[in-house]
Length: 247
Image (tube, rainbow, N blue to C red; front, side, top):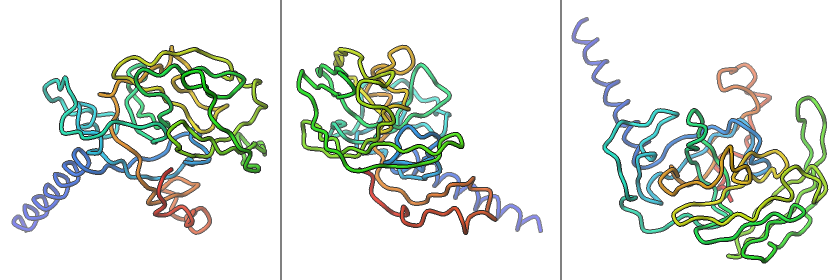
């Protein structure tokens, strides 16, 4: 009996160690907690974060809100590319250390970003927007119909955004200009009228490269209920979102 218990403990240690190593160095699961990235990401989506694509910093070795107490890494290690406009990334917000954030990269170092009547202007040029129908959802028990648009960034990256209010009428539709410092990035959510992001300097602001944990790659699970509410799964699983790439 004692030998069996010891064997089970060893097996669990191996499993937990393997999970920790994979999560720190390769891929980490992440659950979407808010609606700031709707329609790209929904509350209850589970995705995989690529931890090695941008190399490693101290915040790469972060699981949940726990960062492993390692010596200070002053320069990002083992990276061969930097975040690009349009990529969806997970990062630590120094001003809200109890949360991991997920947003889209809009501005890179050296960019001038200004939001004019809801339209992003990058280096004094407005991004392209094309209407793409409507997007409806229930928000706080209210049925709301959003306008949907395809936004094209200067590098040609296309993604979908939604607007609840007309352009120019949102609280953050006229802000800036923001000058992205060296080694920092400007992040925004796709749900433009319901996202606390780099437009709010006192709450998020510019994100240092070393606070970026990795790039969101694909969804592997999605449910409109809590993962523990198994009895609701047959009615809440969003099978069409399983194993889809994030753009």
